Length: 189
Image (cartoon, rainbow, N blue to C red; front, side, top):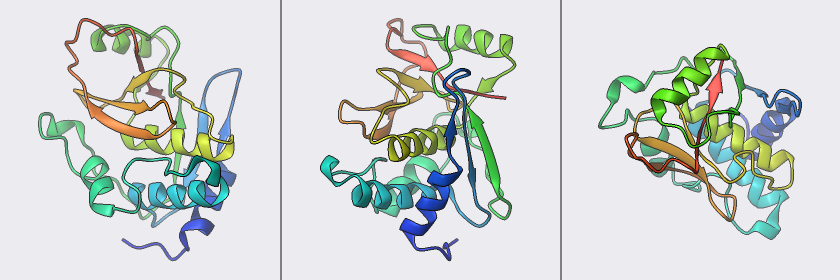
């Protein structure tokens, strides 16, 4: 699927749709019809490089290397392939997400799931996490939505990180790891 929008124009549309509610902690945005998650990420990388050149980097690891982004975000995880849900890109997608859900910090995946359920949330899709974190950085001069946490989404044994330099990347993580002090959960209604 190829966008009819040039990358910067698409990114501007995405950034314009993004809002963050400081009171609730929810981010909302809309990905237009016909746009894949990888196209959105690539356009945000182009936007970040052009509009925030002092960072001298992308906002989502992978740059314009579609294969890298595709392997990370469009292929089912090898260990838990049922975590992956194909998306219908033919319609616009409104995303509502809380990237760091309070009360989930430092807990196991099971306990985080309980906290999310109490709030009427489920683990967020990692593709939405990556786009939300990238959009926040693009709209707020590189600010990190993850703060200092790695965030756990719906894909098992994987977390989204926001590196010291603000780069969004995904990495393997053992859900049974005892030392979870720097891991929070991302949730969506």
